[in-house]
Amino acid sequence: MSYQSIQQLLKTAPTGTEVTVKGWVRTKRESKNAVFIALNDGSTINTIQAVAEAGQLPEETLKLITTGACLAVTGQLVESQGAGQAVEVKIANVTIYGTADPDKYPLQPKRHSLEFLREIAHLRPRTNTFSAILRIRHALAFAVHKYFNDNGFYYLNTPIITASDAEGAGEMFRVTTLDATKPPLTEDGKVDYSQDFFGRETNLTVSGQLEGELGAMALGKIYTFGPTFRAENSNTTRHLAEFWMIEPEMAFYELEDNMNLAEDFVKTVIRYALQHCADDLTFLDSRLKDEEKTKKKEEQSELGLLEKLQFVISNEFVRLTYTEAIDILVNSKPAKKGQFQYEVSWGVDLQSEHERYLVEKHFKKPVILTNYPREIKAFYMKQDPDGKTVRAMDVLFPGIGEIIGGSQREDDLDKLTARMQEVGIEPEALWWYLDTRRFGSAPHAGFGLGFERLVLFVTGMGNIRDVIPFPRAPKTAEF
Image (cartoon, rainbow, N blue to C red; front, side, top):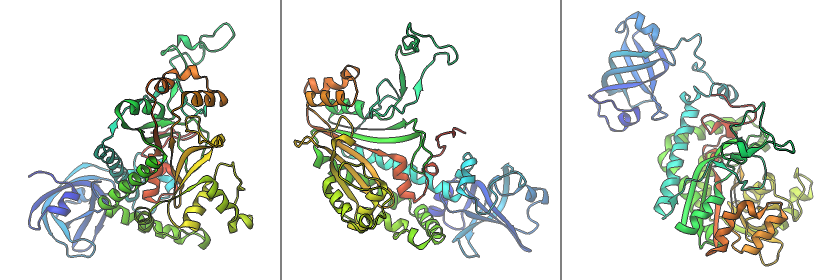
């Protein structure tokens, strides 16, 4: 008899079948006539109930069946006599794989705070909330690869170790094999990186974009999907030091093509999650509704989780320029009443509160903003003819603000070189990047989507540390 997951069993096994169920005990309940054991194996949010008659199992075995213990149960699948499940397993035999001392096992059947669960991130996937998040994360990752494969993109693995800073931000983790206590020094007293492993200073990447552009200028359409790192000393609910980025780059795409792709892509992967993670999303929707009830009325979200996801896939994204958005914001009630925490004027980088106002209050639809001031955007973005703005685009979602950032890339060698010098990047340091403008330059565009931001939006969680298995943040590198 082959072993089936609980998910498979609940979908396909007919009653009267002898089955073997393997999993971890969520709860055990004893009555005068029977013992009820709820088992979960991680394949679904649903548990399956295993039932033994009173006195059927030896007392020494019953004592070992506690929350967290791992069991194999063999028996007949029968219609359930109780509410809450259609079928249950009538126990014939129990094998105990591993026990869990109830005095020490931290995940007893009660409500635990998310803060506490972060402290035991090695065990939190056994909870309903985190098992649901991780299954949804898997589905979204699969949907990302499927989308690009189905649309003629090639998956490009860009370097994790790099000598360039794609964003020019300088907040990077250094990679070195030099002795931290006695590094070799140059004559002027600086660390001599020529003696390091790579013969130069290297860091963990903040983005695969620049290398992605190289691939696009040969293969046409590529995407990256890999880990990226920012040494930003930020403890907000929106930042991680290690996270995953999805970055497509497309030759011959201009700004309009880029927007069309971003909208279709994000709708498609969210639709996939809705279709394939219905039980998990329904659970998280219910969880979020309970959480919302504890908030002040003015802080409560107007949309439930499932409504928010439907909102994104059902609406055409509104497209407008940064300048048009500033006009709307300056003339809005919150601006006139001084209710925005940050003031709005042309030239400022929009804050989340401004982006959410446009999406949730003004348009009541997802928004794509374009043509930002060049001074607040990266050096590689294509400059508009007015000399003041660039062909940037940001996709804004309800509850989160910016979820995608991208642009048409500057394909003019002289303009790109001049802009690099303006922001303090030596063109010689990126000679290989500039070669794609020297030899067969072409219009091209791309965007970046932080994968955890997407998972955060789809699951409705409030903290980005709760949508990655083992979060890395300032002073946090456990597990």
